[in-house]
Length: 250
Length: 250
Image (cartoon, rainbow over all chains, first blue to last red; front, side):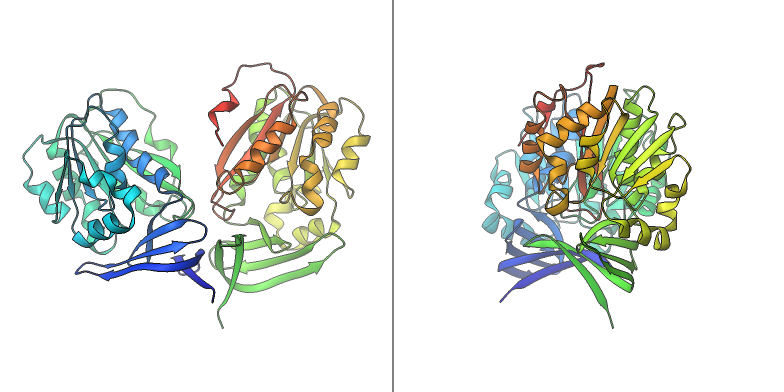
């Protein structure tokens, strides 16, 4: 029997991949979680039937979400990661020697537990002594955080529907700005420039008057919609001159 | 009835898209040709059941194949395009005011005829008075060309199996180098860095001792395998210093 998993990226197109077998299926209060073993991409983590990562190309997404903001900061010591319970972003953050503490705020304990069991090469950093895992809502956690708590805030979220929607709101950007120390840097995954450009422009508008500068950067992630993914980066101070955002047009 | 077209990029994965209707099906001595109207990507041109272009994202491929080499050349006047009977590359080449003549060598008349009829916004340049279309084998055409005939040679080929295989051979690179004028520039589509990196490295090895410099550049083409596509560019002289090729690793 030949089993194929197909994810629709819009109602009219998608990606399809041959499945060796299903390794895990779980349901939490927040979402369903599946781990499939596939011929082409190795193990694949799905939340609500949407690809979160594959063993073959997760390095691109996680390296780009972590290293661009951490190298933008002059001395990143205390890092907040919202979402990303699989541990891939944490693994990359911990490669920076300056990092003293990482707080991971993941709403869904099932993501951490399933990843720890089935994706050891991705989740390995979750056991590092510098990592503090909190199972709670990221929006409320940041709202409650003291001013100037973090050098870098990284949003490693699912698509902006359901639980992750509030992570792209003006209120949340305001809380994050408050929680950032001087010279702090915020970065977030920000969807596909091919399929979601209006969303990206919309989100970009929501930071007006909060952060003084906003830029997008791109990376090739084969198994994400469109094959190219965007990231939003917001430095809390305008220490250096950068290219204007107007180079990206709707 | 819901009709979906699925192209396998490897035996184990692919892209899938919903089809409104089939506009054209033809068979020549060389290949099959289909034009589908799709919900997400507009009209789609297939050769041997492989996506050549879609109305939605063809501009990326054609702009990048044409403009990078043409802007690399100080004064591109006479251009050769091998393949590309759909006219998309020609359309972009003709945007350069310096261009006086473009020779299009397309092995398959059916590609030009079907594109002219069904893809008018892509093929429009084929009727320009500066364009000379020859229906013949590109390899033989270049072998027969006089020395120093062209400022820029662009290879807009199908995948390197069957008819297009010879367009990636050492002999062909040698013929192209001979056919290029001083300061000439060669560029070719060169497959997916995600799925075909060994092929790219192999091809890169075949130009040793012919061209003194070789570089790859990339672009996001959503409907091509992996979503990111590569192009090989070979300047015939080393007029300017460029980054070393070793920055791309296997």
